[in-house]
Amino acid sequence: MIAYVRGIGSGVVATTAAHGAPQAAYLDLTATDGGELVFNARSDSRKVANIVRDGRVAVVIGGADGTTLQCEGTAVIADGPQLERCATAYAAAFPHVEPVRPGVVLVVVTLSWARHRDYRGAPVSRDVDLAVG
Image: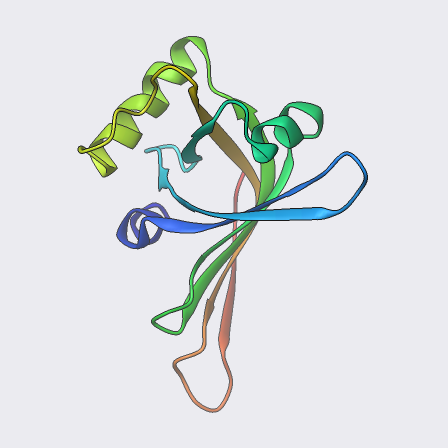
């Protein structure tokens, strides 16, 4: 899973607005060596406000090559030693971007469920539920 996320490098993150509506954003993201997902976001963005209020997220990575990784987990704004670890992972994936800067935070997602789907085979796609947590 870690190699898959790092190889794709982007995905859709869905959060829930205060009034219950889904909100999604396409973002650059990577994975830590421990399998957490990491992305950065403007600190005043809808997704950050949603995550601070309710950390439950869904993430989909891939699709263009006929494979996807569908995930669910809990997101928090990275801080302390976690921030340093996540910033290192993000900088390794995106060396042209400063991971944390004024007005930008790093978000880390601890997965509770993940499924890799492969639609390239015929006649039936292959699903693999991944052990997380």
